[in-house]
Each structure stands twice: as C-alpha cells, then as structure tokens.
Length: 318
Length: 311
Image (cartoon, rainbow over all chains, first blue to last red; front, side, top):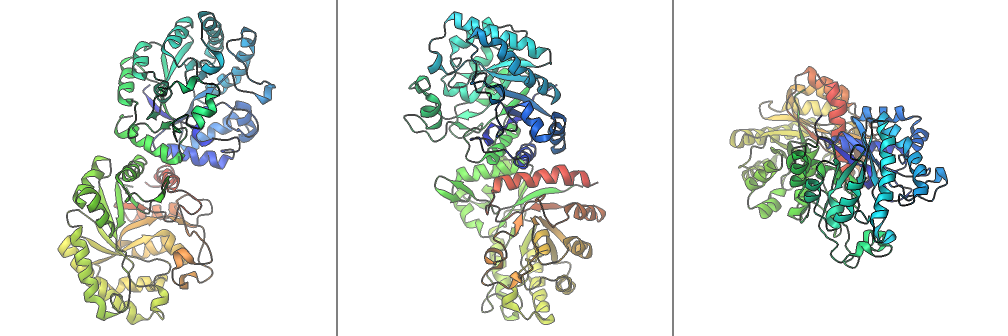
C-alpha cells in the first residue's frame, strides 16, 4: 500500500439542488480521474436532493451500492476512499434534527446512524469514516474534561462499530469546530481509544483556525490516519470563528474582512499551508493512506481539480 | 499507440474582472499551464499572433517555452496562422498575392525561430463565400501558393506547412480536399485533420484520413453534435460564430450525441502506424460550458476510452 490521491466531492454541491443528476456526478468523476486521482471522498447528507449523501440515497439513485461501485470502476476510480459526516446534521430519513456527541443519551443513535456508512464504505473499497470531532465552538463554549470524556465515549463506541466493517473512525476538526484548538484536540485524542479512533488532518481548516498542521501531524503522528489537503491565504486572527453564527457571518460571508474565498487549491499563490512539509511529516510517521484534496468555495470545480492535480503530481510527487 | 497529446489553445476563464484569457497576466497563465499539464498534455498549439503578448510577458518566446517546460509542457508543437484573407492583399486563389503570403509567413516564422515548431497550420483557402464559385483553377492556385510557402517554411525553418479545412473554407468537400493535395507537392504541404470541421461539412474524417493518411501531419480531436444542414458554411460574415443553425458547433471528445467516431479513427491511425502528436481542441467551450471541464473530459476520454481502443 502506498499513498493514493482522492478528491472530495463537496465542492460540487454548494446548495441542496446542485449536483443531483448522475450525469453531473459522472462529469465530476471523469474530471477527477483525468487529473490523476483514483478515489473520491463523499460528504454525508440527507434527503432526495443529496443522492450521494447516504447509502440509501445512492441505492435509490443508482439501484444499488454495487451498481454505483461499477460506475466508479468504469470511469477509472478505484474506491470511495472515505465518507465525511457530521453527527450534528439533520437526518430526514431518521426524523432527526441532528445529534450531539456531547449528549450521552444520543450516543446509541449516533452509532446506529453511522452503521450503514461503515458498511457501504467497506463495500466501496473505503476505509475511513471522517467524523466531525466536535460541534461549532460558538455553540458549545468551553470544552471541559467532562465534555471531552463524553465525546470520547461516543467516538470509541462508533469506532468499535466501524472496526467491525474494517473501517476506522477519524476525527476531523474543521475551522469552526471546538476541536480546532490544540489543547482540546490533544485532550480529545488522549481520551479516545487509539485502536479504533484516529485523526484527520485538514490542512486548510487547521491553518485558518490558527493551528499549524505540520505541528499537529508531528504531535499526533501515531494517530494520523487520514489527510485532507487544501490551502488558505488567511488566518482567523480576530477569532471570528468563535462568534455566534460563524457558519454564515464568517465562513460564508467572509467575516469582517469580507474575504471572498477562504479555501484554495494546494500551492496557491500566497498560500499559508506548507503541503510538502505536511506530507513529509506524514510520511515520516509511516502514513500510507489516502490523501484527499479539497477545494470548497472554488468558483470552478473542474479548474480546482486540475490545479490540485498538477500540484500533486509536479510538486508533491504523488 | 504512441501519441503525445497537445492542447490547441482557445482557453478563457471567468474572473472577478470578467472573462479573461491567460495572456492577460502571469497568474492566469500559471493556472492555465498547470491545468493542461495536470491532465496529461505534453504539448501546446497556439495562434501565431500570440508571440507579441508572450514576448511582452516573458521577455522572449524562448523564455516562454522554458517556462512551459518547467511546468510540465515539453514544447509548442503547432502554430495556427490566423491569416486575414483579402483578394487585394493575400488570398491563396489569387496568384498575384502569393508573394505577400510567402513573405508575411517568412516574417512570422522568423519570430518563432527559437523554438522547434513542427507544423504551421493554415486554412488553405479563404471563406467559401469569398471564393465561390470554387473552380479547378482556384484550387490549383491555392495549391501553388501553399507549395511555395511549404518549401520556404521547411527549408528555412524546418517547419511543415499543413492544411486545415474549416467547414466554411472554400476547399471543403471530400473531392476538393483530395484534389488540393493531389496538386500540392507532398514534400512541402501536408494535411491536418480536424475531426469536427469535416463532420460539420458532411465529410467523414475517417474516410478522409484513410485517403490522405500519408499526408497527415496532425489532428485536431474535437467533436460536434451537428452537421451543417442549413448551408451555414455560406453564412456571412462568419459561419463558425454567427450562423443561425447553432451557437455552438464544437464539443469535447466523448460528448453525448457526438458525430465523430474517434474509436474508428484511432483504429485507422494505428493501422497506418501514426505515432506523432495528437491535438485536442474544443473552441467555444464557454458557450454553455466551461474550458476547464471540457479539457478534463476530453483527456478522460483520450485515456480511458481511446487508450483502450488503440493497440
């Protein structure tokens, strides 16, 4: 096994009614393959407008997971590398408004919610269920040790379940998450079971939140089991990510600076992410999994795929 | 199959400052070159007049090629000469203008002489509407013109002159195209097969390739969904951009409803041992589409479909 390139499909779906038709999926997959990627990372979702959002939606759209897998194979993709999910998001199919890992009473439901994802990943050749580590910082406030312990119990249970499918739970700290904090992240990883819970390092999200992804990789080398590469030209020095409704005021609207776009292709001019250093650190730690390239907020998904593909091939040697 | 893939440049992108080409600034040029290199292109085809902008941007055309090589593109393979035909100045079927065509071509190739360009691509005659009626003598005059140009370009610059027959070109039918090559000196004039242009004109590009394979020096691989059924080739002032039949004649390889049988063409190319450059083109991709996606889809088709057809 060696490091392989995958691409996240999240950039194609800014709104519920985008990226619904299979022919649009096919164009995206072909673009990804043409640029040298061999896997795709799916994004969790719900409802009839998100046909790739959950296993049952794929079955409704493509007939079966196997039929979807054949579409991937025919187009030249080897696998769904991973599935990025957030337990806090609503699930129409389960009449859920979203669940919290900080509420012990909801842990069992979270494990059951995740079970089909793990099974589907196994069927589609994937190995990582990428789970949002904690809800938004502005929603949960200070994360004390009790909160960390509660979340860790949930992730351990989740990890034990997915391990039965050969899939690892990998914690993902996005820029808004309360886990995008060195201290919280350290305590959360320390509280979880290394046998079944790993760490996703998302370079753009951590950098924007003010963390150093190279340092995070080095500090948690033994837990790193998934890499998501994207770049940013900015750091949230004003702490806007911690303010109420940061999803809209900060991430979407651009915050006080009215930044047009937070995330860019790896190697973008003025980019703050040292992707070669991240990769060197990961390789030094023996990392040999998927490297998932992302480009949320791109004005042109195909263009971003190609730019990331060029950087992966010509500057990262992937 | 040992083809190397080149990209015929018509690229433009939407930017916060509106639609722009990569000749507008270095950032856009960086993005363009990285994108085509990412999907497997090794060569670049472009219009001759870009020498002015590139020299301004990079200092010299040689410096531009070094920059391309640093980013994964080996060379500029073919130049398309955007000649403005006018029977008073330069028109291949008007013998009195041949000296000007030869001299202006010499001047133009001189500006690119630092590079190892392989083909100078020309439309061998003016618009159909500007030439009609198309007679044997007009075809003969055009053949004389390009034989002179071809001898000059090959002997002085090492560049082949090659004919590219747009669907609105005066030399556009199967019979007239074949006749043109019969009348030109095969040492100096070769044939550049543009798959979509021939399809639109009602000519099977594979049949044409079979007939002229020993004269072929390159291809434009692009598709079309429409044959010209309305006499659009006679539309003034421009049939490609303004004919009422459609606002977009060209699409990328693999497009749904495409008329070009690329798999059959590749089998024919293999049978004749073609091993040169193949150029991908999809001009006007921005009309209801996007250059980046069309480019990636084209190369997906080249690698995943044609790569498995070819021997």
